[in-house]
Each structure stands twice: as structure tokens, then as C-alpha cells.
Amino acid sequence: MDEYYMNLAIEEAKKAATIGEVPIGAIIVHKNEVIARGYNLRETTQNATTHAELLAIQEACAKIGSWRLEETTLYVTLEPCPMCAGAILQSRIPRVVYGARDLKAGCVDSLYTLLNDNRFNHVCEVTEGVLAETCGNLLTTFFRELRMKKKNQKRQEL
Image (cartoon, rainbow, N blue to C red; front, side, top):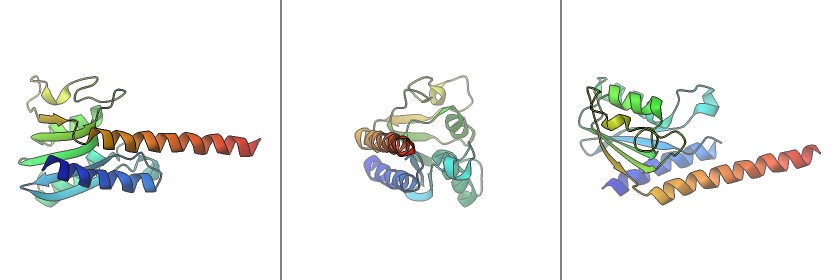
């Protein structure tokens, strides 16, 4: 079932890529029903807080009518950053499933283990690496194409 839901998060990530956003997608499932979706909109909104996870959390809270997202699972294509990990803890999401690790900003397993730190009043069950290769390839392809565009723009300016 995790792969099924991660594929839905991947579809969200692809939406981000089509508008020039870093391809990260998230969905939140409550009792086997997708209740929220999100994809990165940081460049579009010029707002540092419009990460896929935060947008999905906001939508899920509105749908449930509570800031406590108990009995939910968050699926996200990239390991959450410190801001998103904090929001996951604050919203009491009990389970997080992510695809690719983020060695530069990941705060679930890579740089820190915020979601499993017993000093907080909430910890999450974490499943990592679901469709990791597919999730990672989305990012690799996106950034490769972005570098090529910038390189071609510089050539045209000369």
C-alpha cells in the first residue's frame, strides 16, 4: 500500500516540475482515504514556507477540522527538512513515509532524527526509501535540466 500512496505523491511532485518548482510532492492519508495533497510552490509564491508537506498539512487540518492529524500517514517524495519535520511533530502525524533521502537538509534520518527524538512530546513511525530511486530521479533530472537551461542562457547572452 505504501507504494500506491507514494505514487500519488510522485504525481504531485511532477505537477511541481511542470511549473518550474523543485519536484517534491506530498499526500496525507486518513483511514485509507487521501485527504490532502501538496507540491512545492516556493518559487511561485516566493514564500519559504510553501513546501509540499506544509501545504498538505494545512489542507488536512482544514479537512479534519483539527490541528491534530491523528490516524494519518504523510507520504512525501523527499526526506523532510527541519521546518517540515517540526510541522509534522506539531500536527501529531503518527507515521511518515518518504522516498529519497536529503543529505543536505533532511532531518528525519540524514542530518538529524527529529521525528524519533524522545525529548519531544510526539514521535513518529518512519518508513524510508519507498520508491526512492524514482523519487531521486525526479530531482536529479529536474536539476540537470535546470543547469542546462542556465548554461544555454549564458551562451545566448555572449
